[in-house]
Amino acid sequence: MSDLVTGEAVVLGLQTAKLPSRALAIVIDLLVEFAALLVFTLVLSLALIGLDGAALAATMIGLMVFFLVAVPVMIETFTRGRSLGKAALGLRVVRTDGGPVRFRHSLVRGLVGFFEMVVLTGAPAVITSAVHSEGKRLGDIFAGTVVVRERTPVAGGSASPLPPVHPHLLQAMGHELVAMDLSAVPEPLWLSIRQLLGRIGQLDESVMHRMSAGLADDLAARIGHPVAPGLHPAAYLGAVLTERQRREWTRAHQRLWAAGPVPAQPGPAQVPAPRPASGTFPAPAPAQAPTGPADGRPVRVLGLPTPPAPGAPAAPAAPSFDKPAAGTGFAPPA
Image (tube, rainbow, N blue to C red):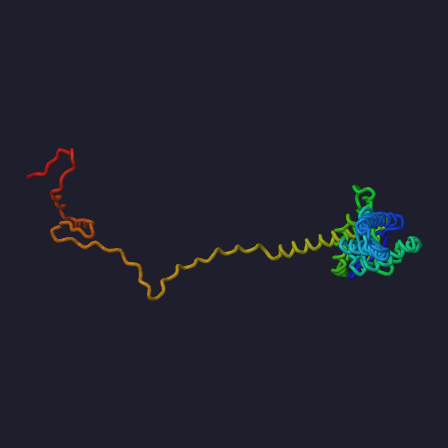
């Protein structure tokens, strides 16, 4: 396990690749590179059959540098530290701070690796990787990189990340939770505890135990209640964090109860109708029917008859001189 530390002082706890897996990945890469070099050499030797010996030797050296140095550097840069052999075995090259490698890291690894693997037949790389605690070869030491595992086997994936806790331990701890003084715990420590418990299923078991033990010791020193013997540090952190959330919920409920019922919100205010601007003409008032003559006869105003005055006798209807419709059998008097 490699204690890689990021710029934010976070311990990553990645598992480094050792000599057997790294050697197998390098063998796969070299086989592919030499196969491509052999194919291109045969093609060029047939295409440039009339070339002299010096030019052919220069071409061979150029092809060797291209396939054994330039191609691995480009592949490692574009794939962020994964060659064909490393991808097959679940490995990746990263910086010592856990970040992805860049072109300068891949270039140093490629140049040093050419002399380690090809010129010196891999002897310096095997010796250095065997004696180094993180399995680094000379290229990793000069470039400031390390090869880590991306696919880590997890034993018992369906099992709970926390060991079972005896009920008597939880009951004994429950009596102490109410009496704990949590005012001395700073907010950053609570935030670290929440982040750790949120990633409890993503971290390695040993890393999880080490980080939870450190946070549990810090928390116990501030509240004055040490972790009970036999209790997992993560379970201790979860119980104390649950007690803090319970207290915050109780205080919030009490403040809401003391504030009284929430007053009803008033309805929307009535917006008066807009008054006409100055200079505009008001709407005309409805026309009143003129009064009729004194004898009570109806008059026509715009085609509408005026009702007779109250108390006046209705005048007989004037005879119509219009031609009746055909087929009615009615003729006007002479």
